[in-house]
Image 1 (spheres, rainbow over the protein chains, first blue to last red):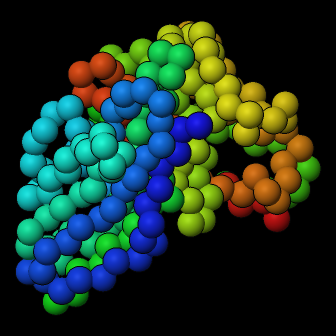
Image 2: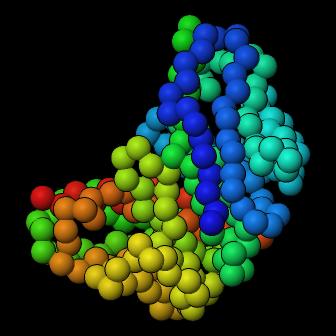
Length: 111
Length: 112
């Protein structure tokens, strides 16, 4: 079964501190992994996808197939990073590219 | 506006009534998805269209739910005989191979 686990419902850090949002997945095959972000009163938007291997807004995420993890990291958190973060996978299941989401982690960056 | 549009933004309905939501995807995207999100959960897949063909439906989509995409452009999601458990945010997304998903702002349904 395809599953995405985000173990932390809430995460609170101070501005300038490193932040890591954890994501583990279960999928028999080679999934695509994504991080989506939802800022207050805004729509869900793509932050990162593992195949592009890029850094967006200072965030990076590395796919670790051995540990089946795709943790999101930023070395120095900013207040504007406060948002809801969702890890998701897509396995081209039936060709639909439907996404399976985790329950999300609410990140609060305190001044 | 070249994003995904959903209408209405909010809907309050009495239990047992029928409701219909509309989604206008990005015009270049041939894939359209419906998701449902309840409090404390991530979005859950409901159904998917490629052009006008509905290719996949989740087990979450009971027979009270029906979705259409008649001309391969906009889509509608209808819920018949609404129940309190149907209260949720209904999200529409469209996708392209290169740019991935774009989500709409959602329709928040409250069944009273």
